[in-house]
Structures are given as C-alpha cells and as structure tokens.
Image (cartoon, rainbow, N blue to C red; front, side, top):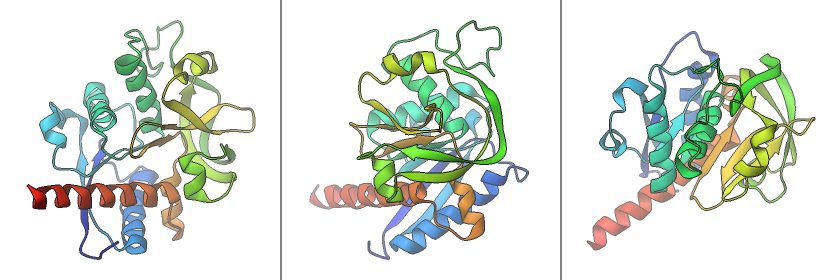
Amino acid sequence: MSSKCRVKVALVGEYSAAITAHRAIPEALRLAGEALGVAVEYDWLATQRILDDATLLAYDGIWCVPGSPYAVTEGALRAIRFAREQGVPFLGTCGGFQHALLEYARNHLGWADAEHAELSPQTQAPLIAPLACALQDVSERVHLVSGSRIAELYGVREISEQYLCRYGLDDAFIEPLMAQALKASGHDEAGAVRAIELDDHPFFIATLFQPERAALQGRLPPVVAGLVGACAVQSVHEAQQEAVA
C-alpha cells in the first residue's frame, strides 16, 4: 500500500477510558497502519450522533466497538446496516458482534421480534442470550473455519483470544440465521459461534472476543489489519473513480 493512502474509520460506541478494549483500539489501528503503510484516522462516533446515514458517509470503514449496551441501540444498528448494505468495510467486536447479528436478523431476515436479552430481559426467546458461563477477562481457544476470511487473516485454524462479555448468540437460531450469506467462521470448544462474516461483502467480520486487546502487548490483531487493508482498497478505488469522473 502507498504511504500516501489515508483512511478514516468510525468507531461506533461511547468511549470510556475504563474499558480496556477502548484503550487498545487506537494502538491496534496504529499498528495496522504501520504494517500496511496506511495513514489511519478515526473518530469515536457516539451512537446518539448517528441519526441518519449522512453521518457515516465520511468514513472508509466502520468498527462497532465493545461497550454495550450502547446509549442509543438504533444508532449502532443504523451504522451496521449502512456498512452491510453499502459494502463499507465493517468490523464488530464483542457488543459489535452481538448487534451485527441483531441487525442482520431484523433488517435482512425480517425478524422484527429479534431481541437482545440485555436490552429486553423479559423476552422469552432472545436471539442474543446470556452465556451459560460469563466470559469475564478470560482467554479461550477459538477454532476458525477453513477457507473463511478470518482464518486467512490469522493464517492458522486455532487461536486464543480474550473475552469480556456475558451475552452471545443462542444456539437455537444458528441454522436459520446462517442459511444465506451470513456464515459462522469461528467456534469455541463446545461449538458455540464466536465469529461471523458475510460472504457477499468486501469485508464484514464480527467476533464475540476482543482481538484488539493484543495491541496492548504490541501485537497486531489480524482482523484489524484486515479492516484497515479493506478500507485502503476502498479508498483507492473511490479515488480512481473520482479521477475518471
């Protein structure tokens, strides 16, 4: 990538210095930019600011970050839908994973009653349900699906990543949810879904784990490199189209 390539990423969520992942994200983006020769800019985009798609047009990529429940759920879902429908490179981690599933179920599959148990605790059959065992500041192994984009980024089939979450996808919904373009690309030891991606999208990956935390140990998270790389490709393509026009 040319060192002159510049990309801008929207970090969707409410920033808090108390959240480890939030402190790690700028470093993860810096490491990715250095590795790829890309100048990475970013804005923390609070969900209450996402009132329409126009708010998102200035960005080459969208990262829905940990820290849910978000101040305005619909703002987060709007950003995810925009990225999914407009082909904008997207990464979701932790809460971003949960809301990517919620957005896809509601807006693509038409499941208007799809719910997140943290947001609607009275729901009888939530799409995003409490984990049988909360993953609070623990590292666990994740098995990546051969041929998936995330497996290509990591270059291995088994990884160990850190978690800080209490909710995940209810197994009862896996089969109908994954019947079209959405695919499960990572599972835990018991087979629960821990990573997803869209087949028909330039770059759309979400993980229940928090890969960005690796940056605090000086390691480049592969999915962040993937996001920045996809943003750079998108930026160059748009610049070429503008030049032709």
